[in-house]
Structures are given as C-alpha cells and as structure tokens.
Image 1 (tube, rainbow, N blue to C red):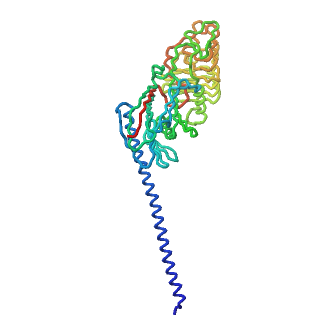
Image 2 (cartoon, rainbow, N blue to C red; image 1 turned 90 degrees about the vertical axis):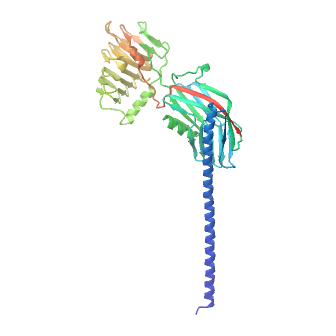
Image 3 (cartoon, rainbow, N blue to C red; image 1 turned 180 degrees about the vertical axis):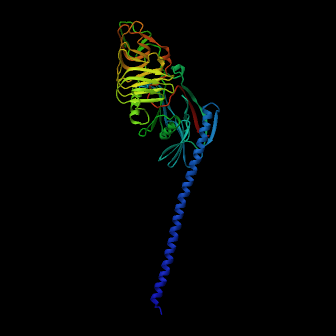
Length: 474
C-alpha cells in the first residue's frame, strides 16, 4: 500500500508538468506573435515601397509630358507610407558631357555640366527617386533601375532630352508639376559652333549620382560599351567614339608641320603638311595581343606563301618574302609583330588586304607591292615605333598609313617608272632621288580605315537639351 509521501511527490510532479506545459504554450504563442508581427511589418513595408515605385513611375510619365511641351501642368499623388519623407533635392546628381581627343584624351569641348536634381521618397532604409528622366530604387545593398532615364542611343545617334528638377524641398503626397523658366539647347547649338555630324574624337558622358551603379548597368545594357564605375566618387562614365573619316586627297601628307622634304624638289603633287590623322598604335598593339592570346583569333600557319580570305593571319616576329593574296571570298588581314620586309606582294579578288605592322617597313629596289593592282585594295598601317624605307626601283600601289613614323622614299628607275600610286601619310616624309615618281590615285579617298582600337560604341549625331520642371505641393 503506497505511503503518503509517495502520493505527495506524484501530486507535486503533476503540478510541475502542468506549469511547464503552460510555460511552453505561453513562450510558443509569444514567439508566433513576434515572428508574425515581423512578417506582417515586412509585407507592409514591401507593399508601401512598391506603391511608391508605381506612383514615382507615374510621376516620371507626367513630368515628361510637361518637360516636352505636351502639357502645362500635371498633378500626381506620391503614394507610400504616411510617415515617409518626400522632397525635392535640387542639387542631387549631375551629368557631364565632354568631347575629347581620341588619341590623347585631352578635352576639346565641354558641352555641359547639368545638375539633374531629384524627387525623393524615403522610408527607413528604402529610397525611391525620380532623376534624369528615370526612376531609381536604393537600399543599403545598392541601387537598381525601376524605369529608364532619358538616354536614347540608336544606330550612331545619341539623344539626351534631360529634365532638371527644381521646386519645394518638402512635399506632401499630392504634388503638381509645372514647366520651369529655362529650356536650353546644348547640342547642336549654332551660336556656340556646335554642329552635326560630329567629325572626330570621342564623346564622354559622366554621371554623378547616389544611384550611380544602376546608371552604370543601364549604360552597359543600352550601348554595349565600356563603362567605368568609380565607387569612391559615386560616378559612372561611358565613352562613345566618333568614327574618323580618313578621306585622303594627297599623294603625300605629313602630320608634322613642314614635314615633307623633297630633294630635288618640289614635293610630289598634291601634298599637304601639318594634317591631323589619329595614331593607329593602340589598334596595332591590340591586334598583336589578340593574336598572341586568343588561339582562335588569327591564323599563324600560312605565311609565307598564299593568304586566302576571309582570314586574319599572324606573324609573331619579322616577315620577309613573297605574298600571294586572294581576296575573292573575303578580306585578308596580316598582323606582323615586328618588321615587314616584303619582296613581292600580289593581290587578286575584289576584297581588301590590310597589313598591321608593329615596327619597321622596308621595300628594297626591285621589290613591289600590288604592282598592277588597285590602290584602294591595299592598306599598310604602321605603329609609331616603326620607320618606313622604300629604296631604289621600288613599286607601291596602295595606301600607306604611318602618321607617327619617319618615311624615307629613295626612288629610282626610268623616267616612266612610277614608284608610288595611291597615297602616303607619315609624320615626316623625305623624298630623295630622281626620278622618284608619284601618282595620286583618287580611289584611296574613299577608303574606310577605322584605326581606333576601342570597342566603344560609335556616335555621329548628338542631340542634347535641358528642360527644367518645378515640383511643388498641390
């Protein structure tokens, strides 16, 4: 028969079990309430931020109507959390446009430095803003694009109808958008001498913004160009290259002032001195590097001998000897990593043959390049580290592009022997010997020779305007 002490211990155990069960139930309920509350808060925050994005996108659309003259006034409700901050920040963000020298990078023209301003919605860590004709979202992890800015790049035409924001620094959730007092045509601009098409150089666009990283991704997607992001300064830069027109209407031309010396004179006619022609150095270096590092980029098996297009061939060193080039099925390129000393080059077909030379070019007496061919079919492009020597009874029919090189043309042959048919560009050109006969071939004027190595997208036409809109409480 159980003792009284045993019954007491059992009773105490039952009470303790009930207390523990109640404690577990209370803790569980409290946890569920707490976690559920956090989840509800998160859903509410996400919903209000989403509403803010939608209303800011609507603001974007209506601001565009006002800025581009389709409406005098538009009203917008900036939705979101009731206690969120809404404000105009007139000094937030900027966009800078310059035209630079394609070779040196030196600034040629400062087309504009435009303060963009912004309409900003802030709720704790979430931020939604209208800036530059686009809508952006920023969190502690970075920024993203909600709707694209006013940046339109099609073909070789860039259009920037920029919208600058001014108005009340503090806003409620009902705002009115009005056209401001200023609207400026930045480019083209007849009074400033800015005209289309662009002739040379590169257009550099830099944006400074709290949403710079999203601007950068947008530039990459829309232009496929090289975008530079500076996290420290919160800027992003995109370069657009103006294709250089290499129309050439001289037998010989020097990039150095007074760079042609003829003995005996006068220089071959027509001629010019002090012309501008961009360097091909970066292009040649990039072609050599590509052939060395990319196994599928160039063919190293053919020279010397026959080259058949379409193909790019590579010689990792000097090349000397004969070449038979067939361009019937496509153009042929030859990249020479050191010196190019051809003895005889014949070209057949309707395509072109282009030689990129990293160092010197030498054509000796009796040697010929493209004898009997068309001048426009052959282009020899020379690095500034290299010099060019043509000696004796040589023959060159083509276009020699060496704007950073010293060129010696030491001629010879009978009085009816033409040493050069086509055109030559060098930094300095010495013409020695008699006869040293030249004949300009006008077909080289139409040669399309792009000597820029940059993969940057091309630009020919630029249209930039700035219109101000005022945003105030309704």
